[in-house]
Each structure stands twice: as structure tokens, then as C-alpha cells.
Image 1 (cartoon, chains in turn yellow, brown):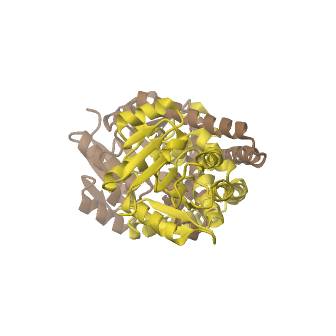
Image 2 (cartoon, helix red, strand yellow):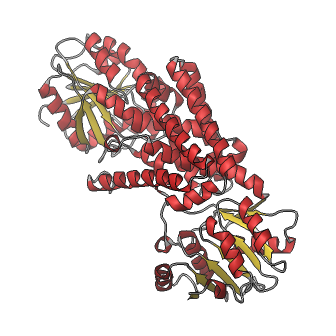
Length: 290
Length: 290
């Protein structure tokens, strides 16, 4: 990418650190400037050399950037947009990697100057781990990255950002922010709530007998509580609807079990099995699973 | 084990096939006689050489056995106990590897002759795969195996069966059948129902955007519907109670999200995270996770 000289990454956790080091690996002659709120994180990021340079001023981190990426908690975006706005170079692209997109678009419209281009990003990558120590320069390889746009989004900025994620190894898809938040409530936020609910419903004593099934079903419940509270609070209506749908399906199964209706139990379990198999087939076909 | 010459394995799916081939690997001079209901399964088991001999008569399979292991669906146990009872050698041990234990104990007491010893077994091993093709002779290595006993169970039979599972690499724990079924409703059967409910609650179109989190949370929903219907139908009361507990926890989270109560959301998510971390620490400590 000849039109890319400098990338700023704000927030150097698992995802921010992985993006920064991924840019160093996948692009030649691109400077990566990293910023993190906590001095300890900046020191670790410096030690791990995830960026070309780590700076200790949020505002300074965006000076000279062609692309600015927010990889901090969603609840900090509004404030960050406001703070960096005076230093953003004209024509630069601002994006974020938050797990919800309606509010970031709203905050960007409110807080960013008219001469920069905001596009939402959501790379579907991560783990239940947190912190720059777990950053990997190939975390985004073959990850789906959703770009969110509205009628007002600059098409050339979208194209440039798309090329950026493609070069990091992502599979890029475009979506409207509201569509994004509805879909990801159901495939990500509600599963997170469900994993937490399942874990909370089981006593520590009983959990000693948990096998691989329980461990997998609950894995995402090990994710950081503050980050996930942020996500849920920025997508409340969709998440609430999704929780209701899970409860409705649980009650269907409970009713079938209560009336010892083998046919209905098998029907419900077989439907889930079939749907999940179709999903695996799709992902293998898309080469998301290799 | 000098007092073990012959083992019969009835049912040659993933678990039965793995036990049969595990015995061949872990014991010397022990004959393994395998039986499966379907001719096609017997033919595949023969090809894969999971047992010393595959026979095509259920009754004949137990002749000469020191230990008889039922690895068929739970709903077939009562009938199998009845059919094999006339051929069971005096003093032999009969066990099963079903995921629930109260009903197998009841059926054994009803159908097995007084001169054989029934002990329940539940090796916590398996996968969402099914069939003898997926059998592995090390599937039970470091798996927990619960033995269930009542006041009437012969202590020497328990000891012998315990040595058997230990030699296959299991970590053996003893329990009463009712305790077993209550615990495993919560750590296994309810998670299965939850994974299926979560999958059924999500549309196929949306699922295309599912990431690793959803895939793990829903993995066990790919298990065989008929086998799991069997399990749920043999543990209805405990499973229903467990489903109610999960729904109660989902509603707690929904309420906190609805009232945008960040403190309460973080508290609930952090409780789940902490509980799961304690579980991982316990399992690492027990060397169940290496």
C-alpha cells in the first residue's frame, strides 16, 4: 500500500498489540505508533516491540497517521475521539475495533472533525486471554473483519481500509452498523452471557466433575468482565432480545423433557446438530477453518 | 491384573471401541470380545481390530467374561441385562458406561442374576463425534471415571473394577448413583441442553458470522441427538432443575443489562470468570489438564 506510511494504534491489549505487530510483519516501510493509557502497558509493549514507537501522549500518537485504530474499551471511544480530534491529520482514516458499531458511529459523527473519515471495523479475533503479552502478529490471519458504513461514509476511505485489513490477512465483509449489532448480539454477546450464566448456575463443588464439554461451553466466560460489560452496555436491546430467544429455546427443551417426549427432544437436538454442521461446512468452505 | 482374562464390550461406538482397543493396549493376555447391534458396526470394528474377536450374538458375547461392559445407549440397558443374564458367568462383574446411573442400578437390581456383581461406571471421555471410526485406544488416558455403588454393592467387585479403569489410565472416583446424576445434570446434561438452545436461538444467516467463541460454546450441540435424548430422558428431574437455574442466571444478567447496571454486570461476569479460573487451576493441579 503506497498510500500508507503511518498507523496509530490506541490501546495495546491482546487485539491492539496483535494489530500493531501484524502491521510490522505484513507491511514494509510503515511506521506503527502505539499508545496505551497505562504506563505499565506501554513499558511491556515497548519490551515486546509490538510497534515502531510507543508514545506516552494520546494526542501525539495520531500526529502524522494515515490510519488511526482505536483498540481500547468501547466506553473510552467518545472521550478518545474528542481528545485526538485537534491533532488528526486532514484526510486520515479513523477506525475502531470495538465489538459493537452503532455507538462508535454515533460518537464519531459527534466528535470527529469533518475533514477525517470514520469507518467502523470489527475483526472477529481474540481469545479469553487479555494483555499485550498474548499479542500475536498472526492473530488476524484468516479472521473475518466486518467494516461498517453508513450513507455518509467516504467510499475511498472504505476501499483503503479494506485493503489494509486484507493485507493483514483478514476476510473483509461490509455491513450497516445496526445490522452488525443485531447479528453480533446473537453470535457473540448472547453466547457470552449464556456461558457466564451456565457457569454461575453450577456450584464450585460440582464443577470439579466438569469434563471437556463443560470446559468448551464455558470457555468465553473467562473473558475480561470489564471489557464485556462495555460490550453488553453498548448493545443492550439486541442482547436482551437474544437472551429471551435462548430462554424460549431452553423452555422448549425443558417442556419436552418434562413430558418425556422423546420425539420432540430428538427433533430439537437434531435441529441444533444440523445447524451447527451446516455452519462448520460453510466455514470450511470459506477457508475460515483450515 | 492376574484375575482378568476376558472382557466383553457390548456396543462399539466411539466409547465402546475406545475401551475395547484400550484394553488391548493396556493389558497383556486379556481377550476382548466385542458385540454391536448393527452388522455394519461389527464389520467396521472387525476391520479396525478394536477387539480380539467380534461376535454376532449378544448372549454369546458374555460367555467366559470376567468383566462385561455395556457401552450401548442407556435406553437399551434393561433389555440387554435381561438377555445376557442367562449366559453371565457366576461371579463376573457387569458394568455400563452410561452418562446417568440411577436407572442402570435399578435395572441391574431387577434383571441381573444374584451371582453376578453390578457396579456403575461413567468415564468422562468422548467427543461430539460418534462411531467406532473415531475410537482411540488412549481416549481414557487421564479421564476421570466415576464408579457408582449402593449399600448392596460387592466391595471386592468395586476394587477389581477400580483396578481395571486405573490400568486404562483413568482417575477413579466413587459416588452414590443419585449424587452422580445430580452432579452430571449440572456439569454435562444442562450444558448440552444450553448449547442446543443457543444454536437453535440463532438463525443460519447470522451464524455465518459466528467466531471461535460461538463455535466452542456450541460444540457439544453437534453430539448425536438420539444418544443425548436417552441421557436427558434418564435424568429428567435433575436436568429440569438445572435448566431453571441457568434461566434464573440469564434473567439476572438480562435485568442488569436492562437497567444498565454496570456494577452488577461486571459482578456477575467476574463471578463466572473467577469460578472458571478456579476450575482450571483445580484441573491442572489434578493433572486432568496437562
